[in-house]
Amino acid sequence: MGINNWPEGQRPREKLIKQGAEALSDAELLAIFLRTGVKGINAVELARRVILHFGSLQGVIGASPKEFCQCLGLGDAKFAQLQAMLEMSKRYLAEELTKSSVFTSVDQVRAYLITKLRARHREVFAVLFLDSQHHLIHYQEVFFGTINSAAVHPREVVKSALHYNAAACILAHNHPSGVAEPSQADILITKRIQSALELVDITLLDHFVIGSNQPVSLAERGYI
Image (tube, rainbow, N blue to C red; front, side, top):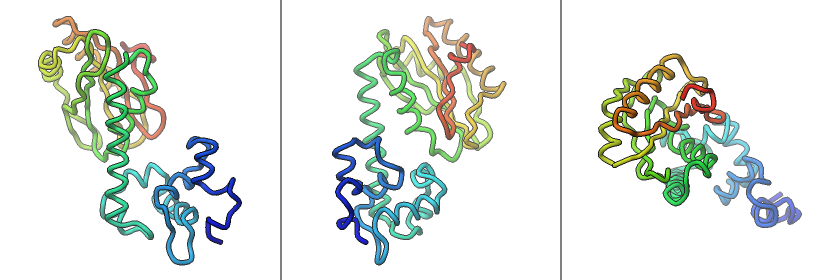
């Protein structure tokens, strides 16, 4: 049965309008993005099959262009639309962080870092440079490594912080394995960067480790 023949309260688009996007399942959200199914398969069922194929909604979002386009019902146009949607989300969150203090936008900081780093297939070490009111000045990816490690140099973080005239910084890096638990190396480099920043009167507020679940804050763990 086509979605147009479903009861109105079960149609994803109408459900979203009446109840909000948070009321929808992953498959229903993806179905709205897909808009249509394929012959013999409605959009919701197609969305379920796509999520099953990639293992999760995160898997869909993080798929390479080749992997994405080879899946039933997808293709270059859908891939382009998805990337545009993701980039709009990143820019929206970045704009919000330039307007409000990170202390009142912790959830937005986490969401922003997730959109930036969660789907990356190799380790990326990034820094959020903040002004004296803790508004975002600039986000910069400063080091790149293998899926196991990244060579991080505190002097480069300090150099960039001075360039942007930052008063504070937040560090972030991803664990492509999906496990966000900070390692001893993560803790050590955090303390080294904190010490280096203190020499030029710049405050290190936090260091987030991004995995497949909620980002882990080293400040909340007591390491900063």
